[in-house]
Image (cartoon, rainbow over all chains, first blue to last red; front, side):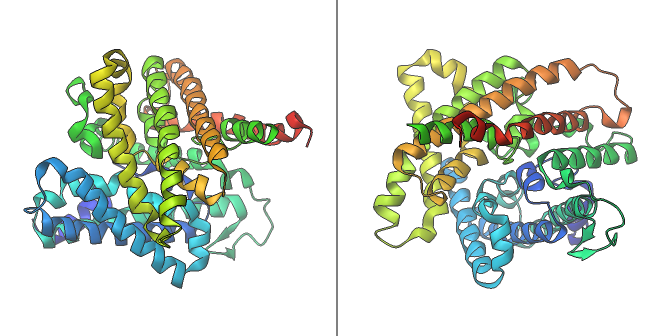
Length: 223
Length: 197
């Protein structure tokens, strides 16, 4: 597959957050500011690229029956490395992302790409898929973070834009604002694509990492 | 006793895992269409959360801390949880087939549920005792059940409502979740009031 279309696929056509609706937990939880969204996006991208490359390298060695646990170990290894790097070089980001750094392990995007793509494709393709998906994830989180920070505190990237002329709606920094912003963004995508992009992919089995050993798959997805 | 109750009620209402802490959003949005599957999933989550805490806490305190390999926490915990879920599924299938019928389908989905890994790591981070950790995990699971049951009721109501075309489906569900989460913010002072702190 050509590399540019792999990148475009991850960023636009199959954007993990806005189109596939995967990785919803970090999307909602850490996007209280643009910087946090960016930090989470880049951390996840680093893990995704690393795990995609290693899994594509090991795809002929890992026995089929234990592939999910093996993928998880590879991913957890990279998460630990990223966590240590953040602790050392970006302690503030590490502080504000907190629990969601170790939880990158269970981010369905990463296990999903390992299962769907990296374990079936060449190393270079897997790397570009990781970059594309990672950029798509980072972009979506940065967008969410920017919107919530701007409305919720009147600032963007820590720079005060409204000069305190408008009272910020602090509810956008809290849990309800996260759901609301995400809902509006998905609705916007629906509107722009006239419902074609998301319609058939609503939490479908194709995006689910555990689909391989899920008994619901024959019954048309999660209950 | 009182501190146990405080931990329990905080975990259920104030720090609700789904609506306040954003853990376990995937099953919250994916499995909340029907009430019975929402309840089944939630009971499986409660069960696995308590079990995972019961196993990971001693491993952390007895193995990782004395050997000074705390940085392996993420790898060890996720492996233990994955193995545990598999084990529980096999055991249920063999010995309690009735329970396996109702909970079994949700068990594989729980391995990669961030709420389970999240609660085990949080218990360590908050430096709870063993009993407090178990209570906190149980509370977190009950909070998940509460959110799921409430939300599946709401979803059934809004399923066929006449939304603007762009908001049909997932966006409407997310907006509904936003309003439920707003309601849960009202609980923020309830612990102080309840226990006269």
